[in-house]
Image (cartoon, rainbow, N blue to C red; front, side, top):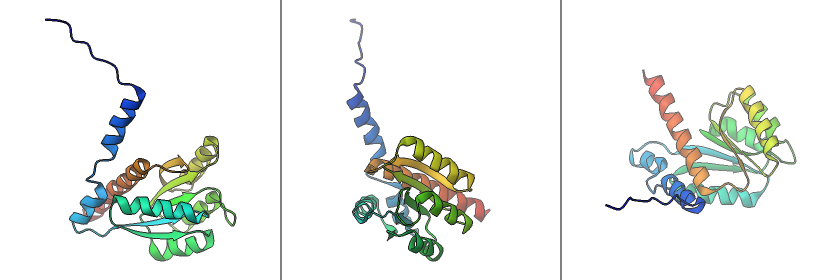
Length: 173
């Protein structure tokens, strides 16, 4: 019998395979809907209203969410306390209070949800912000360069839903 040869995957094929795995049409959010559980509460904070619309639309395509959008840090802090989101998606560079200062205030106010950091800034800045947020006791799910891709957002949502489920089962014991 002739020896079988396998061709290595090209980078694009590998990316397609990875994306197919991530973009499973049956998301954790849809599973949560079907189980009759309350939708994940999400707070989006970005001074760019267009980016808020894009993120909000991307979330709505992934399933049912209770989404609040804020473009000012001060109002976002009030929303954080009233709405108590499970997931905070936060831009790092904003004019009134920057994302790092906002995260410090969120931690001081006892925020316990998952945090996703977004920024167009250099990766070293994003990494430093992530370390500061962790040092403040926040649960960082990931840090991404803007604009965030839908597959990345889905991964972060799924991670937060799994984290929330683990917390719920731990409290039920």
